[in-house]
Image (cartoon, rainbow over all chains, first blue to last red; front, top):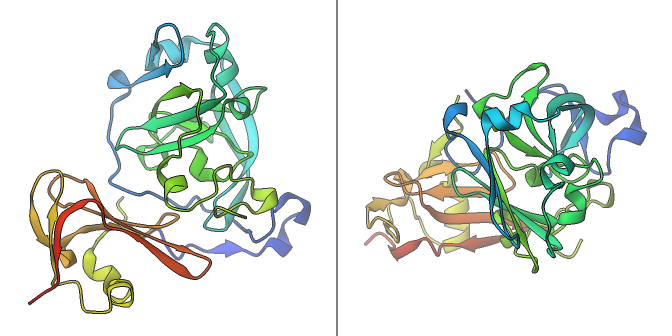
Length: 199
Length: 85
């Protein structure tokens, strides 16, 4: 299936206050990937928090599903310029996963099946700003969109919301992830149009 | 569903970057040692940049990112890269 050339609505049809500069609104959900889609079964999936912690903490998919869940409706913004409004997600807040973890780290490096990584300040994963999402629009998250579970950090460009996430490495230093290493912005705030390093 | 293409999809970009026709150039994967023409690489265009992977082991061989009109190239995944004779 070809995923480029999707049909979009112009920003003028959406509430402009919800569309960051340089973005247009689409009803579709384009599939963007830097590699083949991993097909990991939920039974084989784990989520690990490691790095600047006393001991790594690991959850199975079923242990994650047993934790208190959060549902959110949010807008998402891709650096390739599409935005999608009112998307519905369900998962576990990073606040829940980090609650019992003592760390000196200021930064996090999310890592995924397939070798993808992305970095962000740890502060951007807390305060109700991020979750490990396993449902999209009321259905289990498909592999094309990052299932069995993905990171969701909707206040940053969507490359920060790592598909097929397998864990987070807590770090004292800020280590650039895959796209950040190739010139994309280290932070990626869509409202400041932080697409590339130096923006 | 797949968005995998082959290296012929980026023939024009490669020619612009390297200054010569590159789909018949031969590259050696730095991970598995597979030797492939660039036209045979597995290419993913639908992301912030273009990623070309070894068709044998999926290692990232080449990344092309256009930043403010300038195409940045990382070919560090190759152990060797030779233009066509």
